Length: 113
Length: 116
Image (cartoon, rainbow over all chains, first blue to last red; front, side, top):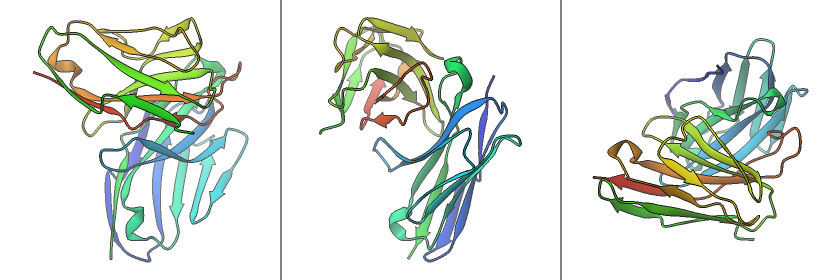
């Protein structure tokens, strides 16, 4: 059974810092991996989706990498801002549709002004 | 586009009551999903649908029912509510093909349900 782990559970950084959020998964047979952002009391917003054949995806100050063989992904946030404060969730989709989107518990990020 | 909309935003139920959570999407997505999120936890899939008239169970389907009569709507029914169903419920949608999970999922704002 696929399990997704995110470390750390919470992270507090000063504004302007570059930071890395980690996601690991136990079964490397995945279709894709998605990173989401969740603001308090709100739904999820998709940030980046990496297909299994890709190594990384970039959007603005965000860069997500995928190492399928080792079961790891990282989300890199450059020049962090207070508006980046949110919970970041990682989710993986299994191959062949046999396993549904499996979520990690998230990393709660606080960027202090 | 409104995207994915959910009603109600909040609801308090007594044990044993029933209710329906509504979900509508206007993106013409064929796949729709219901998740629940318990405090400090990731999301868990309750039910999903790959098109009108087709539904299937996810990881935690017990105590819930769904139907999909149109592309746009995917209501979730709670029968005989229990305290264990206190959670935040999210509806999502995406395009899908045979490689069903290859596409980005779009989420609604959620319904916060308390069962007392």
